[in-house]
Length: 298
Image (cartoon, rainbow, N blue to C red; front, side):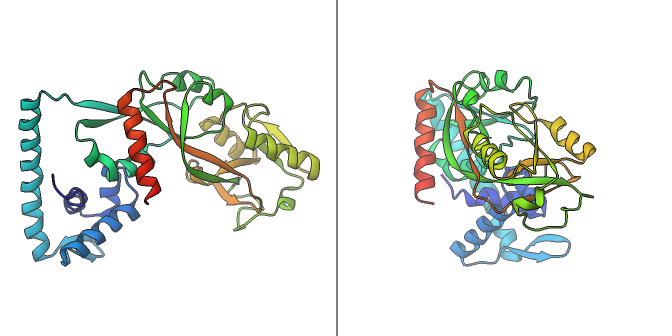
């Protein structure tokens, strides 16, 4: 019932910082900045002064802020009254989140499509990245989670859920900060000669299996060590402690502060997207359709 950019504006004003607003909204700081810039362009007004101490509202920004709070609160009350008259019930979309499968990508999408689903609320449900128990988490999609945003070409995962692909991430290599390769911006495969490279066990991921085949056939100077079918925090810790290299993803570059993730000159990428139930409810399928429309016109 109101311009959704107002929500971002009010949050940024309350937080006094794009970064803190991004954390509260589960968006990237860049996404928050773009939404504020778009709102200012639509209104033809400068709402914030960017200072070394954070964001400060301009005089017209203060006026818009006051009225925006009223508009948002009034709109919410109006919707609640209308829903009571219509007997409409709220539904909750439960989104799983973990260190290796954070929900931020979902929340970025939600900020663009939530107006289509006023009857839905979002509930964030944390879970642990435990390599021994992750399959039991995936089996709960549709029961305890409606969506998990995950990197996935795991055949074991895809026997238990569906994937709506949003894109791909590059395969990279993570090295300990004191390693001889840590200062490089781009690795050649030959840079890995004589090193131990930790990667997932063969037989579950076609992308990883293809990369393993390539390395074993064409680069036998690299010693490959199995990490099991799935990663968790212990895998990252082990590589840092033992000084070994880890086949990593660009989206996991900040998982361990003592590992530096570096792209490699190869073309291996892995899909990521929304994991959802094999037999989803009509409302979940409707949400997937809305996401598809947003991605297509992005």
